[in-house]
Amino acid sequence: MLALAAGLSLGVLVTAATAECTKLGFTVNDYGKDGPTADAKKLLDKHIAEQMSQRGIAKYTVGKKDVSCELFLDFIVFDEHTCKAEATVCWPGGAPSTGGITGSIPPAAKAKTTPKQ
Image (cartoon, rainbow, N blue to C red; front, top):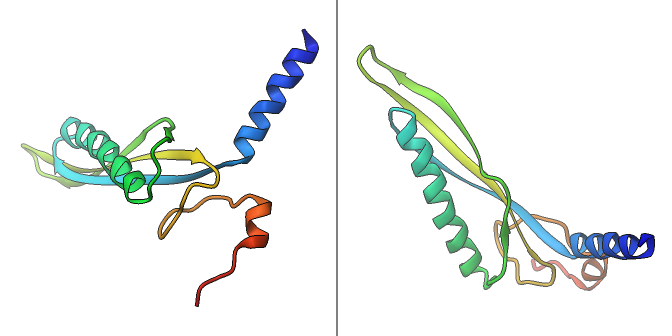
């Protein structure tokens, strides 16, 4: 049983080491707080799908979505909030990554990568 657990944890480490990740976000400014919170989450999903599609990444995972809101305008009868939804997006290593994607490059790939000038 211990050998199985050790094998499973090694598999998880190898998978995590070959994954590339980035944090993506989307900001919405609107009246109230509930509306922009929901819109930021919904539009973040759309933004993530578009970004991954543009990069040719079909399989990816999205981590927990965090939403933070700040009061933008405070009038007595209504208020306006700016809400930002963020999530970490990961995909298997070796997938194409271009402009704007940040994350770790596996050590083997670093040796083969030459910067374009």
